[in-house]
Length: 142
Image 1 (cartoon, rainbow, N blue to C red):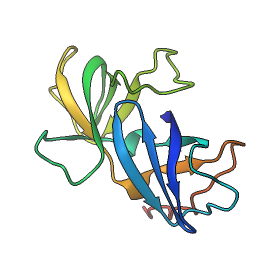
Image 2 (image 1 turned 90 degrees about the horizontal axis):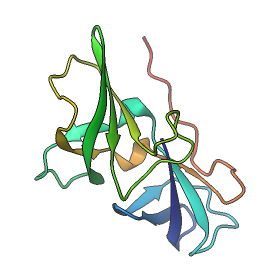
Image 3 (image 1 turned 180 degrees about the vertical axis):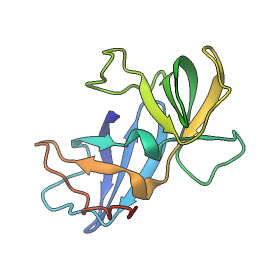
C-alpha cells in the first residue's frame, strides 16, 4: 500500500507528512537529509500492518473505508477497502483500494464500513527520488 503525500515539516530525524483523507502523522527515525517541507513523498504500509480499529480509538493514524472485496484464506482474511479520498498508488487491482491482511477469519462483508489504522512506526517513508528514508525494520522471528 503506497500513498502519495507531502512533507509538512522536516526535522533532523523526523518528518511530518499529510495526505488527502489521512490525518498528519509524524514518522521518527527518518534520514531526512535533503528533504524539505512541501516535497512529495510516498508512505508505504504493508497489508499486515493495517488493522481494523474502533472509531473512538484515536491512538493511531486511521481513515474511514468501505470493504470492496473479501478473500477468506483459511486462517486469515484479506480485505480490499476503499479509503476515498485516500487512495493507494500502484495497487494490484488498479483501483486505489487498500489491502489488509488479517491473521484471523473475519465476518466482515462487502459494503461494511470500517476504520482502518496503523502504527506510525510500521510505516515506511520514501523520498521524491524513491530513496528509502526509513531505517530497516526488524524481521519477526518464527
